[in-house]
Length: 348
Ligand code: UT7
Image (cartoon, rainbow, N blue to C red; front, side, top):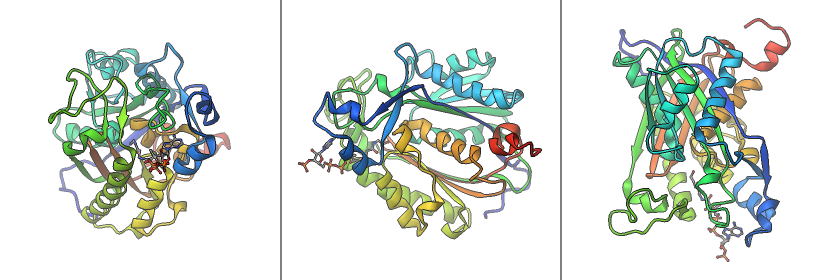
């Protein structure tokens, strides 16, 4: 592991919460309205079902519920938070930011608040930005939310995209952790040349060069697939080297959940078995910026991710963008302890 400068505090995740909407949408729901079938979706993607937000539920709403999930188990989790980042590709509005709307509803009015737009890479990008804000002395703790209501921006009759995406949210507080724990390194990148592979129109009708966008998510699935397999392997390998680690040191790979075949290819590149990663896209589909916190929280809740274990985050998304990070897991606060231990009465 690269030794941090002596003055650099150890920073990591100090609280975690998640939320998925109640409505379950199985693959079979798409058969009635488009030329697809449930078996094709499951065999080509690994997805069996996803969650859709209620008609009146938007990204700020699911984000707030993820923060409230954290607070239910750790009421003091937001103490000293003076900045809020919302990673999202489905913001309630371009202004006000979804981060400001979430902050207002969880008692953080006055904190800095801004949205981060790197699509599915957004949550892990947000962890790195949060680390930078704290190291620069600008913030003490930062709330990073990955929240999406993708069902509102995806054409539900387009078989290229509709079958893939779901709604959900995850929230994490970044702050000081004890020696030997927390973030080690991040690698972040983007290449706008791939912008036409994954896009959604906002103000301009076309991308530079004249590529026409539409009013719902557009995607060249094969191009994104090839890009994803390459960047997950490359960026994961680079960040491990930056931290002085090899893949044999990794206890858990925490990947963006887009397609189980993409995750399998990344694990093969690292020479690691699928038992070293956590997959939940079978139940939630691709929730963009929410996939990483949802997977992380699932592993923490069910006791798979244990105190002191080495994590490797890998994600990719629109931009096209990519990010990888290394972190030693710290389980020191109530929202980071396996629920089964608490249920069994084992003290934290
Ligand atoms: O977070 C990032 C967001 N996006 C992604 O990560 C997407 C990455 N890409 C993928 O996951 C995959 O490329 C898809 C799941 C989107 C598509 O799977 P694929 O194995 O790459 O399929 P394909 O595009 O190569 O198409 C294979 C066949 C085609 O038919 P022909 O030409 O072989 O007759 C498609 O027309 O499957 C057909 N097809 C479908 N059939 C049933 C494409 N979409 C569907 C569908 N249902 N929904």
